[in-house]
Figure 1 (tube, protein in one colour):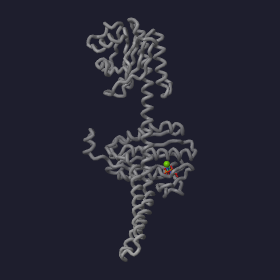
Figure 2: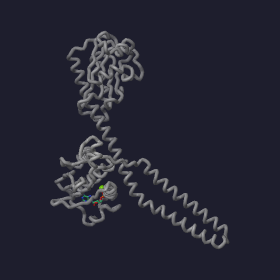
Figure 3: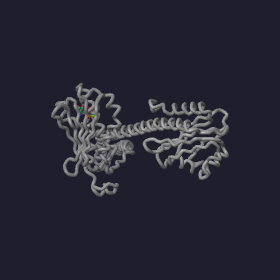
Figure 4: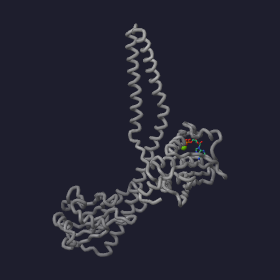
Length: 408
Ligand SMILES: Nc1ncnc2c1ncn2[C@@H]1O[C@H](COP(=O)(O)OP(=O)(O)O)[C@@H](O)[C@H]1O
Ligand SMILES: [Mg+2]
């Protein structure tokens, strides 16, 4: 179970619930998960012996036996060998058991990373049953293994979600750059409108000697105006869900987050990534999704530079440290071959790339984000080998950082 890949965890747990019930002669076993404290408890896995007494369909413990559920999710184990053993204060569990069986049950909270992420229940419906300590120990061990696997599954799911978010952000920034090129699409119909209206003005100035021509000029202008409006509408719909959201950000944590997200990529490229956050770094003001994008772009370029250089030193270092007063610098250093002099002073321009599959937009997007935050970005050759790309971000004001619960 400890080696089960994340996407096979659910199947594996279900099969183990069945095996455990068969081995211990039980009738129903289930796993319940809760994503976070305060969130609802969901039934995620069940095994039920054929011909077992009926159990409520869509059984929702958080609703049907709320008190008992809360008690278990607070980390308490509930075992009873016969219904009369259920503690009197768990009256809802008593009522439930009277109505639906089980005659004996063990409900074990599922701990992971110091919190309860769910519970597992093992019940016997046909008769009472004792729960000797060895049996409970074994069940507890199984539940610990489930918890570890579920936690792994959840963290992989969270990484997928974060990746998808990064992808969306990258597409969005790409679009913001493409707007520049779309503006010529708008200028073209605007020019046509202008010339049609100019012609119309002349005709009217001459007492409108050719009414048909005047009508045509007006109709042309109407069509071109519609076309322009359509272009504007298209651009706006592209950005519909781009709501820039700047907050005070722990930039060191953000860098670590991106490095975590790209750990797979780094491993594949056999490249080590080291993060050095100087202890005195204050929070910065920024849009975390956009800033993740910046770090990601520079990190990917560093990976590419190292791959291209085919060197045996394959290391990237990301440093986060205060720059001049009021600014924080983030620098990404690689052990590649350095920037090709042929592109050195054009690499921030659109579509400038030295890579066969490059888009030549990464640095442009990064710079546009950094500048929209008020910062700057530049590159310097490393003394040894490779290049360092550094960008700066403004420090969050004292007022803001206090409001977010952190002084200074
Ligand atoms: N870390 C780096 N080391 C060397 N050259 C780099 C580095 N980062 C960027 N470059 C150069 O700048 C160019 C543009 O980068 P970028 O805008 O990210 O586009 P792309 O990565 O698609 O080529 C790259 O093709 C490369 O020549
Ligand atoms: Mg790039």
